[in-house]
Image (tube, rainbow, N blue to C red; front, side, top):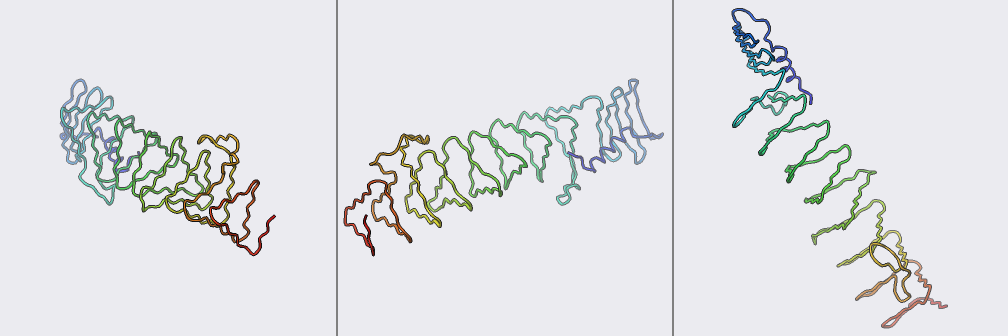
Length: 306
């Protein structure tokens, strides 16, 4: 993450002024030891500072005229250990209109960073939060992972993959918008159920193009109410009349017997009505049987029997 210009200006100032510049008598009060240790108090107006420097490593603590404090360990580590709490507070000004005008806390790590929390961890961001990762981002959670939000979204420039043992999705409104020319595919090795549970609701399928259903096993449709089909074009039924054993294997074992109907329409009550604006034809390759429990009436201007 790039450092903003104001923060970089402060870092440059601290790096350039770590030695305090030229000292003037009698403002400089220095105690220096044989190993190189030095304690310095400088009192010139506008240049007041205090510095404690380690002689062999160059590590130092310096307090600048502006009130800035710099702790520098050029050779090794800086360790802060507390038996109880450590409180760090920075800044007093928060500008919600001009973000760069707000005071800030900057942590710049050249190498790797490790945070080990033995207890719970709570982070409260009162403004916005932006995380940018140039490489791989991995999140390992030992227990549940819960995200609560007012609104949310995921923008993936490449592939977005979800691999779970069980996936539950609850919502009042669910929308999926597939862009033009794309493909939406659900592939599963098991049972796929679409269930509409409200008696006043509707399960609707719409297609601006073709709709195709390929079933290798049996296909069953149960309608508790009316079934209405409004077709602008034509209807074709091609029944092979094969004996299929087992589903969904679609393995055949010859044709149906002569006494077994391959196309059957049965009504418990009411009548069957077929109206044709043009010619009505029935072609039978074998015996044609009409079995009527009542009278049979044929009404036509002309009847030809061959």
